[in-house]
Image (cartoon, rainbow, N blue to C red; front, side):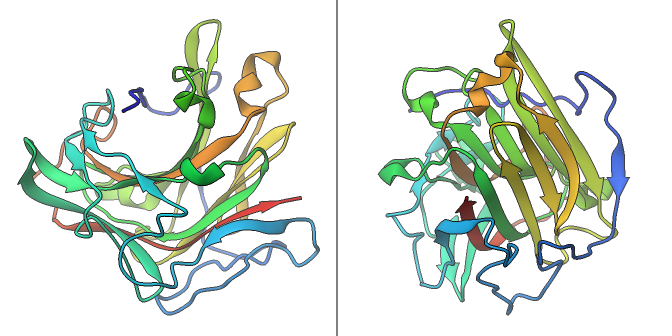
Length: 287
């Protein structure tokens, strides 16, 4: 098991970050802004040919997630983040049916923890990429202490490099509860001068992110990383500094729901279980 911290404090490092309020809308990427559980678009990028699909999971099968594409990280405490769940590889916590992957956080006693969930990664079988567009269409869970994420880590974390020198790209995070159920966060983490450094921004949607599917994406090259919500860019970060060399290397994808932890805090009497993160597809495009 590899151990690393995913330390979160409210998003502010170099400058005070604004919170944008936007309604879901399309743009010239042609990305679906919202949909129903029955919709499953196979390609949401521009038809200009700028990007080509190089990897995907459409979840058009039944049962366990495809072991040729995903493997599970199993254990408790969030690898140093004081989370409350135990991650498993059980169908109760990660199941594919009707064209959708469902990750489920449950309240139950399991291996000394009071909650279970799943954390899936693409690291094995050479499923990692350097640059491109990475996107997923997801319907969020909700509630105090619920922390879903669609994110990326440098594959060198499995080769002896420690976080944050591996780099981390949070395509989407949400900490649930009250107005937080409508706020998504996009962040990059790296090491600079021996210190953990990060920058990012947030979007406040007009309704809870658990109400419908939305498309969350980054576009990443050797110059910058750009974050998108339903086709609308809301943040960009230059990675040209020599201190940000972490982002000039391959990364793999992770999907998970954490329960509790340093950033969201614990569930309370308002939190209802089970909570689900539904994923319609995950796509990786490259030029």
